[in-house]
Image (cartoon, rainbow, N blue to C red; front, top):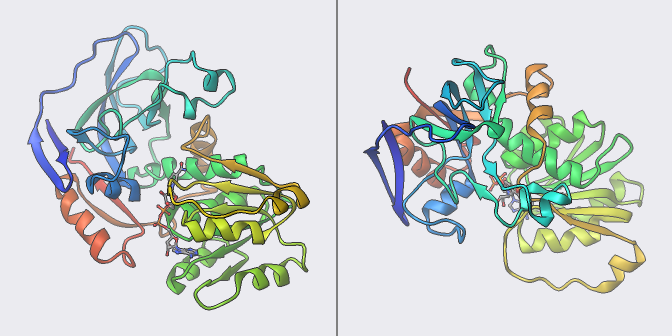
Length: 340
Ligand SMILES: NC(=O)c1ccc[n+]([C@@H]2O[C@H](COP(=O)([O-])OP(=O)(O)OC[C@H]3O[C@@H](n4cnc5c(N)ncnc54)[C@H](O)[C@@H]3O)[C@@H](O)[C@H]2O)c1
């Protein structure tokens, strides 16, 4: 079978690899049908992911068809369409006992710590397989993973119908967040420095949009909320300045949700934490979000709706990544597909 293997920074090769084999009772062999390319794949290919060891097959937004499985699997049939949850963990750590397996000390992420979906076949654990209805197009099903990031971060922020939510950034994650926060009934303001992205945010349900390169966003949020400010601020731009600005945008008793992995420190005074009695939470990957997100996709409550802009054969992954570098304004979500 063919696989796209990263051997080191900017060294991606399509090569022949042996078919993966089932070796454990809970193994499932999957024929990969589509893989989404995420910004973090680009960072990894550039050698900027400290968790990754080369050689590695990238791809954590994965969907495919069940081929066969070990004798311990009783809930799947050959031919089932599945979305693959890209994380595994042993189940014994403190994080798991606290209901947060996504930050388990022994967490393994496909495409980062272990091989991912940019290959024709992959063996996963049964617990990673989530069935999805066969009439959902592969290029829509593959959006389940980014939607789970939105499910997780909005859950961490406890977004509800009475809340006014401010989202920094209208990339794929900011757009998924906008749609999920609307499903949860919230009123949403989205910021981005690119006007076209703000147009798409509006088309995706944002009630109000603002461009921080042109407008004072603190004033805009104050006017939008009659001075109350945003009850929940979710940072899907993940820059030092957006993290810092969040403390000025959030209301009393509010929550800031942090998704970024930027390591640049920014000064934050103690007073806003205390005076506003803020909650600041991190959000990493997801826990238990796949099934609810897949149900929303199956019901048509969320979907593609313009998010997938480019679909190419997986062998052309390097060309797709080049396009993402050269024309970021054109590519919202790039999806790699595999022949029958
Ligand atoms: N914690 C997690 O589990 C998790 C998962 C996925 C992605 N992420 C992170 O979330 C972020 C968003 O992911 P994405 O794929 O949408 O990335 P992206 O780069 O496509 O989107 C970021 C958006 O922020 C906008 N932006 C830039 N400066 C801004 C500013 N000052 N104010 C507002 N917007 C600004 C950009 O124009 C862009 O549209 C990335 O940093 C990614 O690493 C975190």
